[in-house]
Length: 117
Length: 113
Image (cartoon, rainbow over all chains, first blue to last red; front, side):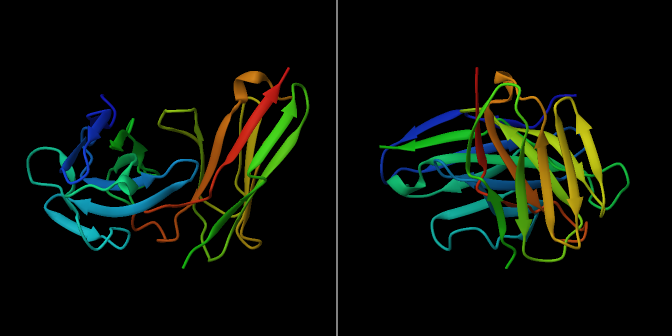
């Protein structure tokens, strides 16, 4: 069973370009979480999605950032008109249905390291 | 708003010594996670603590949870160089309805020969 797959692993964008980060959850998982890690800091929650629904986007910046998790395909975190301050590692995690006895945690992908030049 | 505080943030220790990392949090929760992160890598799940009084051990690491004190500890016994990494605690205050986590800032552990 493959783990959570994120791509690309590294992404370089010039200021003003768009960045698209992809996250394929573990097989059987329908819940995805995105986190951002700035240098020398802990992870900060951005958004929680289920298939075709955004459940909690309380950590998303109000502008330029959006996320989706379509019925088919990976979850996408999209950053428009990137700025230097967007440079960070972006991690996604996936889980089964919370509350079920066999589901006790979400599992993290390898992350996408975004560098804005 | 849930706040999670770890201390110390930096820990330099000698091989063979014992030490404890502390994780305090500000709201009621009985779900706490410990992770390890190596430089440039993802998070490796170490412990999942889901009830008051939970204690788990793996090798030289032992984690415990006191929900009344809102405190978790990660105890390192007889440290070895391979344990050098950043350790994060994370708290889920959703009551089990999701896995939205609030992380501490991390403890950078360096084990010296």
